[in-house]
Length: 243
Image (cartoon, rainbow, N blue to C red; front, side):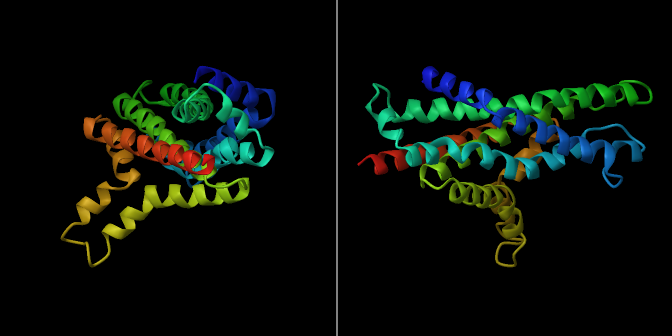
């Protein structure tokens, strides 16, 4: 598994992929946090990172599928997947190795945003007037959310040898898992009856819950379940294509 992980990480940083991903994420979040007037921190009367944590899931919905679309689709396209299958390594280890590599790249893109925290910390009046607990919770929620999106993207990539198809299908699944349950819970058939249950099926509910600074084990279990479920689907898809 770690050989797959090292290979994927090396592949990312030997090309422009890693630098483009990290650069794009920082540029877009920086524009929303500091430049665009409607969302700029400088236009508000309080210090916080709400803009970062509200816009990050939308950016990840497009950025992470762009990272993961090559995970298996490229292997199928180039015919190197058969070489992987001949190695003395299980399908689970192949999937986990690629998953951890993709997730690492996303987390490396998030890491430089700590500069934003330092900047806002210094700008606070008095200095350091921040809800640090909520910010820590938001970072934890963002890490788990990105892991869920990576697992969804890898499952999408395992279904096809066309990277564009994998990219589009991954965006669709990420949107459905993150936001669609919020919309469904407001339908008349659910509203006032089981709307709270339907809402809890979506990623957004648990992401917001953790972002409030209260880390509930139920939210952690939910994210781990989402990651495990889609990785299981990816392994199943690999086995199907192998046969």
